[in-house]
Image (tube, rainbow, N blue to C red):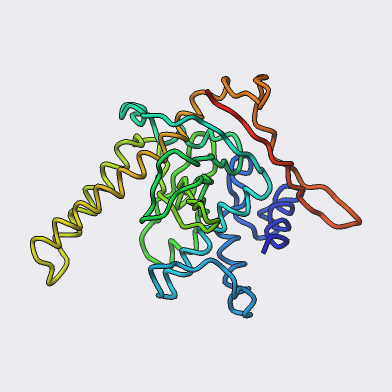
Length: 287
């Protein structure tokens, strides 16, 4: 999987992606588009080569598995290249912090950003959280899909980026025992704030809880409470990322010297083979 995605990215960067039949994606901010990850994942899964792929601990359905594992890989694989860890003291963020356009998330300074959350009191479904990795989830626009469905698929571009059918900031939660799970996401849009997204998510989940057949009043209230809790967890995690983006000029190294994120690595040729080297782990401190 790692080698195949290196080939996809290197081919798109070094050659004309369109002539190779590759979709376009925001090359600077996104390691590789989900089109590539999903295609390679499906191919390897069909060949029985992904027995150890991440599986949804709460869902056995094959369709959900095809969403869950590739989404986690879309964060872990780019972080394997950018390898940064942001250390930030525990904070109580004002709700107004998320009253910014969700397009701000496109300014994340690396393909993936990892936060050290050890000792910050984060809990995820009863598990102690040690960290979170954020990365882009970008699915390219496919004109042929529009023709098949009969209705135009609304693709949106952030700023000058190419448009995408799905344009999210995803997250993966890292637990203290070294395991991980798919975390909250935020849809990126020029027309919606991050706060509005999570408010809408909470409202949608609450509305759906009223439609569950056979649920009594107590169960519906519990589901609504869960919906609010899900949105609130998303707000808390994304507050860290927004705070980072808004304070990039205050980053320091362990000695207190001012630093910036290292550039994302580019493709290089080693022994006639194209590869993308991983950066040495870069600790960054904010506060």
